Length: 538
Image 1 (cartoon, rainbow, N blue to C red):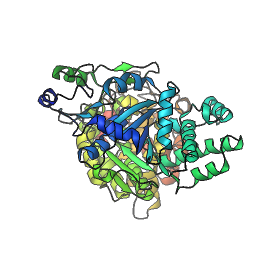
Image 2: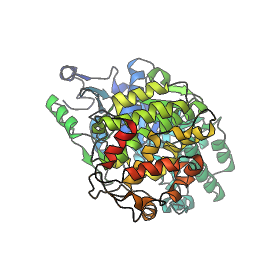
Image 3: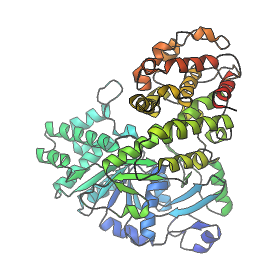
Image 4: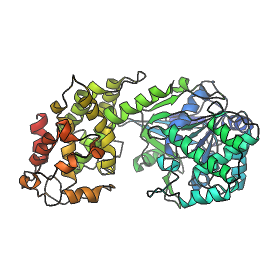
């Protein structure tokens, strides 16, 4: 069985293998899409193929649309050459269930994949034609948060952006420059309205996209490459809107076990490839089942009926509340607590940690008892039901090969949002006592203990990268496992830092508790485990 248009014409072996096929003709859909496109997506990777394209597949299967999505890749054009074209832009989607079973479906909702990285003039010409067509309703993005960045860490323009500004739209190379150049072509072709929808997993994503596009447009206008009228067109959200969104679905790298399973079923050529830019990608996508997409409903040229595919279409405040619910109470804080304690206790899998009763007790206390009282209820997703799914299905899923070591990366940047927002909510509420918190202080103490780079057995441990790692480890220098008194007084400057925790923990009345828990975890080998049990109950 080959994953292609011709390969799925004989449905019998696919059905026998338990692989669902699309309920429409891919070739007819592709032709209609090229003639009158409605949706272009930038970022041809796994989250797009395994989630977003699947949404359009639902609409196609139900006869609610007759057109698909055109995928454009601005970073790594080899994905188009080596994954899209050999398989007629189809993806074999494998959903990994927590009980160990899998669901399999051929996703054929992508009409074609185009290189937008400068590797094909013909592809870029086709993409330009899409943007000039008044039928185009939206361009969406999954290019990662760094794809919107125009400046480096020092605040100066990236060299590629600087070159784009100096050379103009015809030489655009950065993703934001490419999109702005395409918008200019749309403006010149009649100024048709369009929605630019970031679906990347970052807060206020639409705001980031708009700021970057406007910065390029302004820079080109100052240099005479585009007109003031074009800049006004981009700034007018009745013409070009930038809806915010919240996305949530884990699509890990292709798993060998899934590749073997597909091979055993008779599906050919499923081996992953590694591109010259080190992208590891396969003709199949494996991912968890739960998925959420909440989008601000501002589409000046109309949109597909995405609500019929499970998307929550709502207002900006609701998108923001949903993001806050996920990031500050119901998912991300649990992940971070598991990450630091998983490293200390020698785990290499988040799923394995959820079989540890002490760690499960920790994240349940953080989510249900300490997070829910101050949760931002978005109204469209029930916070308690969301935590239930996280704790019972998502985190324990053995198919999700996520490691505490990866999640522990950049923890200093995550804590002010993942825990700080809850701490600030407690501090601001006269009816709540921040000093009564137990699990969150324990998570913070565990993070500080983790920074010592010594595990609970007393063995050296590799600490994940963090921009503040050297500064924090210097502040903790001289603290010795087995000698808790070596920590006395050393934590206070860290705990008083509002940049790290969202507020001054000493002023909030929580620093003594964090320090005491940290010192208990220093008593010797095994003290981290003992402190978890003493604090949370065995």
